[in-house]
Image: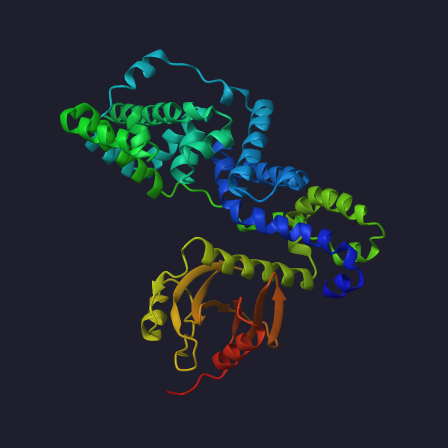
Length: 186
Length: 245
């Protein structure tokens, strides 16, 4: 490698491109996979999405100047996933608007009861997986990735002013879904 | 909805104060707030985070590495980009399909990648050690029952390589012992596991890290650090010939 650099100094900047890409992308690979896994709800599909997204990212890397690599990569991962979902799992993207559920969102279940439910890791995971994608993704980005509202808006393309209400509805739905499970079990 | 903004720390200080005052007089809203907090804790501690499998990490990484032969054949710079883009698609598929049948040299390279990835991860995800201790009589027994072998742990504090602790890790398709030492501010990870192979002590440089691999008493050892090569080899020499206390 070093020998090649010495022999071909004029190419050194290009030689560095893959490693600059690696340094930018690899630290965020977990975040990329986490988002893809929660959007596709399948291990293998998530891996495919991340690889596809990395390829897309690499192709458009010239236009990237090093700010907020995480949000940049997550945007590409999300777009890749949505394109794929649109082709393969159309029903995942059609959000059925449940008016009763929407009404009930304002009535928060008792936190003490929820606490018990939340400790049931499997129930929480299932409830999260069953949320419509648009709600699932904001919760993942906010709670698991710790993104700010501004970053969530950048990644999802939701208007910045809508992120807060989207999160509010996502949380409401998740709580209700857990509460409903709890009632069913009784 | 403003409660969400409050929980997420996205409101301005004046709004924050208004909300806090409102909670004092409105049980319904403070109930929502409590359940939000509980939900957040549950989401963050419920092991819901899906980390990228190592195989995927390796696949993505190897996708951006042109192979040496291709590089030397490259006549025109732009060919390289075509090759990189094209290889991306199939190298990734090939890697997992033929990984088992690759020649030893490539398998070795995969191990180097894996050790490097483990090292980088240990530094990235604030999970350097499972058992933080500078006392080898604490670290060594900690592995009992967690591994099917007893890793040797050295006390090299006097030589300037203090022990930081131990960690369970997963390398080369098995659970391994991860021992963490330090030299000044440089972290040194030592991975070890039982193996029948005999390898001569061999220093390697990879992605800006220095690695040394050796076998000793039926164990394969890998030491990796961003420390300079000379001091890392001095460290390895000390591990191989521990000073008597």
